[in-house]
Image (cartoon, rainbow, N blue to C red; front, side, top):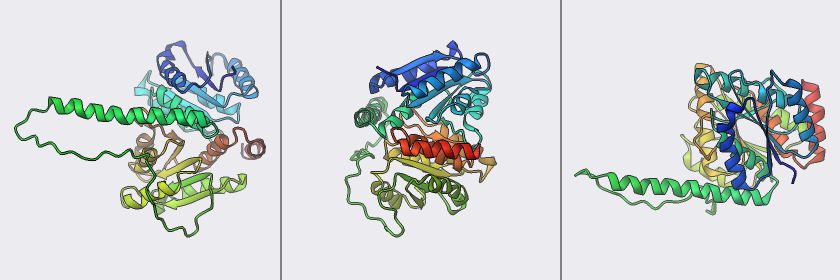
Length: 338
């Protein structure tokens, strides 16, 4: 049984984070391997592992590291397969590792999740594999429902502790947000038929970054749909759009400020969601942290600030799994831009 996910840790001290990932992959029934290799102290070992694993059928790499955390980047430099980065809190609350992982140059994207979020790294890896694997998609649905029911159990436990004289309990009909069986209606003008990627920009001010994404997708021949939608200003239209796009393979969400777009997208889908923070305030620091630090179960594959090109390349890497024609296009294109 050949591994589909290769986990590399920069140090054995990162195992407590890797263990979270292992638990998820076991639940998903996805074969994996785990190795300790340092980007700085055993550079050649990292290169050999990545090169051989790419040839042998590994579909997703996961780099777990703290401090300067160059491991995910070195992995990305040596493969065309998707790389998930999990920054580890060692110093500076893990911000040093987060920036080292997420702020990659054009041509070598790293899909970064939150600090110490090994479980989200593995869920993201599962979502990527699930794009091409029906059984993994089924397992993801089961896990997502379990997260949904856990919240319901927490609510019931909380109710038992509330004894205030003025506590007045209301009962609401709960609905799984992943249920998209409703009859959605949306203006179909300029709608691409059967797109592989749905791109959602939160505002017209984000369109410049979105265009960087679409330029690369056009060059790679990947079909996409681009919309400017805000879950804050137009929640019903946003929900309708997510229903229309339930058959796409992945989403790219582009927004600044509190970056609610990515969080809203993951609430409605089990597909991979790539997040691109925009620098509208605070140099994009607010949007970056809002995107990457998602709670367990709902990861966002966060790319560097305003790196729309890397978002497109990551999307291509995901779609190229099992697609020889797209893989060859991707390899040729990367040589031109690096």
